[in-house]
Image (tube, rainbow, N blue to C red; front, side, top):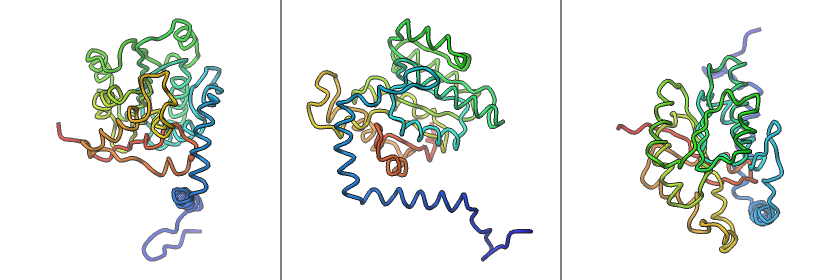
Length: 264
């Protein structure tokens, strides 16, 4: 039986209806004061408890809140990049996560030859050994050096030339100056419709003094860098729908969607 066209348009499928309802429901959370206040208190407590340090991806520690991984999974499935660039490696779980998502896209026939690039100024020997020993290591290329070093940037840019879709995740040094430099170096490589995810923007929402053992803190962190970057760049917008539905996220205002491509 054929579908009945109403008013010149095909009726929404059940999946489209579900997606629309989810977006509308999540948007309402922004005005739910009780929910937002609870989240702010929870953010402080999970930061103290090192909540994000409890998880693994395919056997490798991944220093991310599970909710942010859910968001990245949805983004990768929708965008279907064949290159994911990550700054900040730590244990390597995020690289393995990205490699596994690209492997799934390959199996589904959505992309060919997916690649993950990981950049870190100091890749610990035991972490490097674990990454290279993983079955998904063949999809990962490691660069050791500063993510804002001109030589590193040039090498990464070269690797994007034959790629159809690029997604970027910035999660290394969290100072304002460093993240802003990363955004200026890598954001322009992001494909239209894809994302630049900036990690740990939630530092700005913690009470002053919470991160005194680090060179970053309130007023000097990834979120302030995002705000500064967007003042000078109209190619990206903050995807607030992601913040809204996650509620629990380490990267509020950190999901930047590319909507334009500047003329170089």
